[in-house]
Image 1 (cartoon, rainbow, N blue to C red):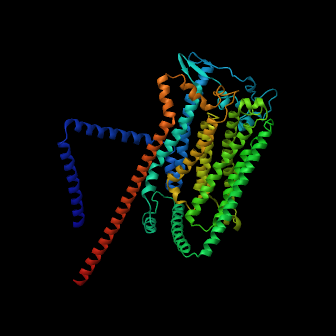
Image 2: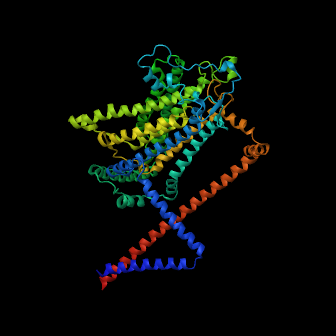
Image 3: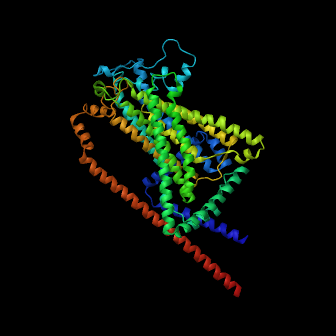
Length: 627
């Protein structure tokens, strides 16, 4: 009782001393500074209360908390990441609809006393474009087929690039430059995505810069701080227990492998390096096979583009890409076991290979399309800059391919849940056969599901330029996928018994998403800057490329502003600017290194203090024994 009284007295004295210091500090402040401090506190309180109220309006707040309580923070982070993509796509859709789609609709239908200008094209033979609309007798399956392929009645709607043929919209006395708005909005949604991802991942970057555990600290963290106290479900608790046990085994296995690597002879090193080179050649062969299959499927599908009734031919590239995304990771997971890496490095290398396969497949599809689009055998075709006979509006056809990839990806997610997971759940529940019970339920792999939605998001980023309303479809898709995955997790699957350590935070998801965004920049940049735009459709039909609208707009500025802009774009400005950016980057890298060294010194100081305490306790114990 005396000890508790002393502790309470100490806490009260500490609180009183803090209040006295604060009051003394305020006493010596001027009236203006006191008012600033009080107003800052008031605004902080208002913002905190507003933030608390807005948290109740957060999408899926209760559902995500429920998932966190039953299955832990690892799986909860996946659903939080899915919510982030829903919000991101909704914001992108709002941008494209507000600055591109809405002005076009308003001007075309004469709303608010508006009108529009259309400049006639300079090369008439390149402007022939007859969309594959529904003509004559329409069969009952025509509209579902059009919805799945983006052709027919959808081709000339605001969903695709070919709809936006306006050069300037007049809303009252205001002239709206639609081609410039289209290009700037594209840059805006890419920049917004980049900044939003960096903002969300900056905490993870900081932790990775300063947090470098040794094996002893990792062991202590798992033993004393590894339990997730959000878990309330008994099965989830057992699963967490097994996952901690698996991580401890993994640490011991890594230590054993380190010792094994240290004891390797030159002969062993030559053998293992030769095996790894051979297996990586097999990996390259698998990747080459996937890429070649996608290329051939795309060429065949585009060669039979006139056969619009055959839905299988139109979806052939999407089917081949889906098969490649399924088969290649299975081969990689078998080969990685033969390469004799540590368990943690096995997971990272397999994930990087899977990310590369999924994202590179999209790049191969676009390369295959552009090789067909840019193939010209006649002088008329070369004058247009692209194959105007097969692809009079090639941007819309690229948009249709991205649309089909997004739709097919959603169909696969629904089909796997309905026709694989549910039957497997019924078999495991009601069939007592040993093979069925041995297979058990399918695990809910966090990394596989993350790669799945990042693949779809990369398609959305690339396809939004060619299909401005594609983010709206992506928003609805991820909204439905959230409930599909939730039902699948609760009723048809079980959480993975071998969780990936990086998946316990959103940092891993955001890094992979950032890779997808950077890879989306490449085809979009090539398309905007180098590939000639269609002369028969779209806002850039009177420009050689989409980027040409920027210098054309600058020519209408005053001479002084033109000189400033051209000076910014010149090498005389770019080289010093690049050097300054490099210096700033090196400064922050050095600052991060300094912070890391400080953290290491503090860590060593804590270790020394703990040893001093142990030494003192030992001495006190020895003194008590002697007395």
